[in-house]
Length: 272
Image (tube, rainbow, N blue to C red; front, side):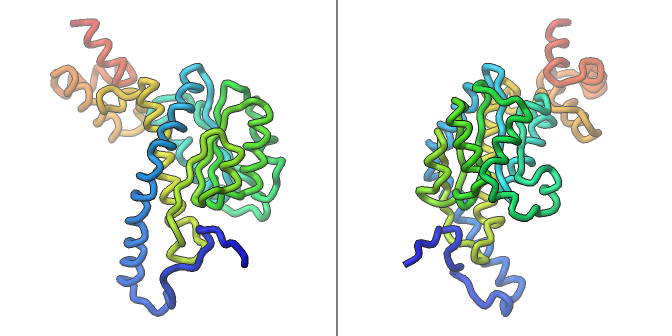
C-alpha cells in the first residue's frame, strides 16, 4: 500500500464544479478555520525556531529562506516586507526561490528537483555560520530545499524548516523543524491553500517576534518603519503625537526633520 502524504490525500469535498459559489467558499472557509488550531499545536516549536534565528541575527547574522513554488514565493514576500515594516537593511532577511526571481511570477519547470542549486544560490550571498537558513516546503520533501539544508548542516550553518507533513524529510536535516499538519486540501494536493496559509502565518510569527526582540518595535509601534508614502507619514505623525503629546503639525515637522519615528521621539526627548 502506497503511503500518501497528508498534503496529497483526497479532499473531503467532491463534485466541486457542481457547487454554487456560496457552497465553494463556505467549504474553503471551514477548512481555513482548522489552520490556526494546527499552528497552535506547534507553538513551542515555532518559538524555539524564532529564538534560534534571533540569536544569530542579534550577532549581525542574516536570515535566509529557501523554497520553491508557493513556499518560495511566501519566503520572498516575508523577506521583502521586513525593510519597510521594521526599517532593517534589505539584505538582513533574504528570500531565495528555486528557479530565480523570474519564478516569483512564472513557474520554472523542474527547478525544485535540483538538490544542488539551493547551496549554489546561498553561496552567492557568501553565507557564513553567523547566518540562519529556513527551508519552506509544504510537502517536506522538495529536493531543492532538502539539498540546501543538508549542505548548510555540513557547513555548520544553523537551519530550520516549515512543512505541512508529519515526519517529513526536511525535518531530518533541519536543526529546528516545524511541522504544521493541516490535513487534505480543499482541492486535492493544492498546497497553495491551507498549507500556504499555515506557512504564511508561521513566517509572520518568526520575523515579527525576532524584529520585536531586536528592538524595532517600541510598545506596539513600528518606530523604524520606512516613510515611503503619505499613509505611513500620517501613521508616523500619529505615533509621535501619542508619544510626546505635541500637536499634529509639530509632530509632522519633527518626523520630516528626523526621518523616522524613533529618531523624532529621541530628538523631542533630547530637546525637552
